Image 1 (cartoon, helix red, strand yellow):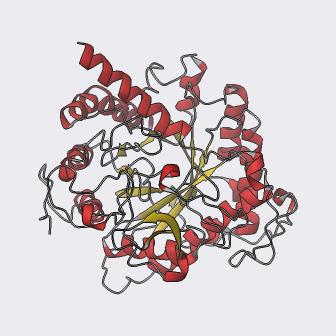
Image 2 (cartoon, helix red, strand yellow):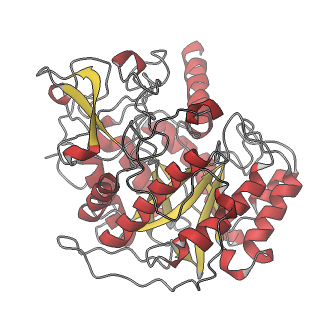
Length: 483
């Protein structure tokens, strides 16, 4: 009983931290006061990062209708940008940076806890990405030694070719695209906002060049955030539509004819956004009250127990109306189970009933699929590496099978494409110890005793997408060999 209670407490902690505390970019106002004169190599020349970016001139250019591009070389799957139906969409953090990468923040972000000391003692990630396919100009050496005596290198999401490489992998493995995370904490700081918008521009360009799809996902979590963030989201969305023109892209995801937008952090006990009246007004604005060009198909990123107002959800009855006012519901499930048996129990008792309710009320339901979890370095060594094992992919495939066979589930969130901080990344990472730096504690793909290729989880996500599309038979067994 004690062991069981300990596991439940651990899982509850992961749900809170992975969805919320780590959901923001953990930056404070002091982070952007350095006086570096490093040139911003990739930002638009029309952007003035010294002023309030929400005050830029509106363009009023009409929104274009999405069209499907021709298949890219080596790929015959081009996702339909006009619907969320039958899509598995990855969360894309895009929050990695290093000094001199062209971003105005000009510092290390998310690889290390220190802005300027990339040493192993400051490491914040548990998985080491495979670096051999990135351009040398898009990598920077750290102070961490590799086994051959060289220095471990890391990439920056501010570099267009890094994001393009990620989208090329999505194309090559038959993955549909991403929700680009847009963290609202410190969005009022011009350098911070420009950095995040640079990455969004990279995502837009990469999606268009590879035939993938993308949409924006706001995040309400963060210690400095309060109800005023709801006004900031409205202004930011207007700016993205008017000046960044993201919804004009042929690859921006639409559903029922509207651009798709997700807002994560709604109704969590640990999020400081509590004004349900103001939140209801924002939802109504996005749905009906705004000018037509700002209308969206709105998805709520909500607690896992949103339906019964318990556990991680706020319990006041007004939240029920908030949840059910969204066009779509996406519960955050990372950390909600630790084994395949635990998943099956949670699926039968919670997810099945969530999906039924949403189907009855005409709400799109999008559950979370995730491969495993590890946050040893992010948690300053206070957690073991590989805390929720991937089981060679079986942990993830159990979810894929259950979601695809459920008639009330037609869209799935894959958490996440590039989340090496918490060990949920599906992109190419070190497959064994031989590919790791000589220093540090790391999670490799063979941690569970099964030798796997670097791209194993890209392959699994692509196979799950095929199964959702009906291109391969429904199966509870991984349909490919681990070669």
